[in-house]
Length: 469
Image (cartoon, rainbow, N blue to C red; front, side, top):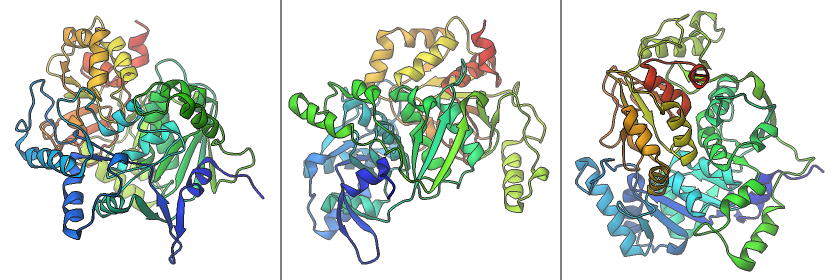
């Protein structure tokens, strides 16, 4: 009999019951909520007459609908006001801890969860947001929910789920200078395809993954949903434990020692069976950039835009042709040198202090190119304070970048920040779908280094060349 995967170990430890349809009823250790999806979930809970089962295991965060100006308030973005105030009102009524607009620890929900130690190895963690898989970078079994599922968790602290099949992506070798976790995950998606992980639980492994910092592992897992996976995970190790030590919600004293003992049992057994295995050579990865309207529409910055006519699948051929029409690009066009209008550095993918340090290194001593709007939006108020203490804000401002308060901002354009129609944006976010960053916006996903390089160049560049100067 084969050994167990990390996913299997955590899943099995949380099964409350197996239901008649074959689903498992899972106990949920942590539930995090944000302003955009909590309103309806609380309303449904109230209508059903149920109480909130474990308010002490729920954390609410204001992030999606906030304006990012320094003096923002409830009214700064009028379409968000009702959601922000409802989450505050409901959190008080049900006894849920809330990181409100002016809280010192406010930030994007998938940034503050790990930052505060709410996210821990071996936990089940749920949230009404598809990028909850981010939290798997710490070895948690974390997944996004629909609104009805959020209500179910609020009422019962459990969730019925079909057991996903485990898949492993092993990345060996070492990426070169100027390459980051964002390049790694965009490369994986471009090679595997946007539906290759459909409904599965992905474990990222191999020497190149183990060499990543925790913040880089969070970036890697963040985009698991972009190739169809429900869950993305990295096995906890000493890097994980060092990151979590003394975090606000992490266990302390003897509880820490007990937790550590358990966490060390979590990595997949040597003979664990995965339904599918994918191998990736990290040495083949160049700085990645998307050309189309799906994260799998990714190429190395030194490659030409592909020709749909070369595709054998009619479905893929039509999707590529549509993407090229939307992004106003032609086959054979070089992405390197393509003029851009906007740069966005932020989102739950790339807004942590390590991301800002990388971008600042590129921006230092340079100026944002004329006509370019470049904005930096830290992932949390803590990240913002740390960046300011290190002088990163000064580097960005002197270069001509805008420096904002933390929130989801331009990632999903459900707030006051968006890319104008027809404008071309290099973005560190996770989605380049049609209209994602604003109506008729054209998004090219890239690493923070590539985004900063585009800002100071006014066009897409191979950031490695800038970093050599």
